[in-house]
Length: 86
Image (cartoon, rainbow, N blue to C red; front, side, top):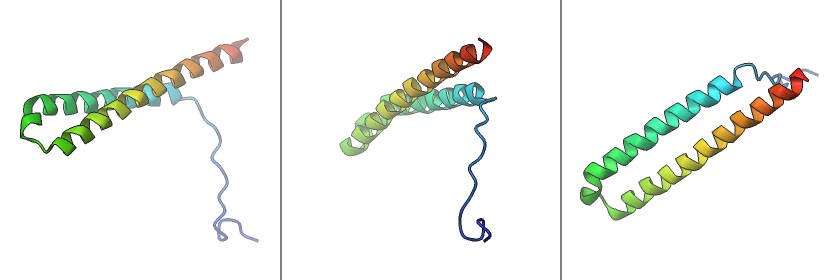
């Protein structure tokens, strides 16, 4: 039986070599998007539909939570790296 033909895929190996770098890039990109949205709201909120303003504010809150999650993952990676050295 050919698993690939049947729709089964083997999981990729867990390569964490660049995980912190990817997380830092995600933080950077998310912060840029958050600040762009804040600047846009500061300039145009009074011209926008109130529902759109609420949606953008909510999206920025989700971005803040995502950044917190990325930072927690970086701390976990640092902890795991220390454990591997011991």
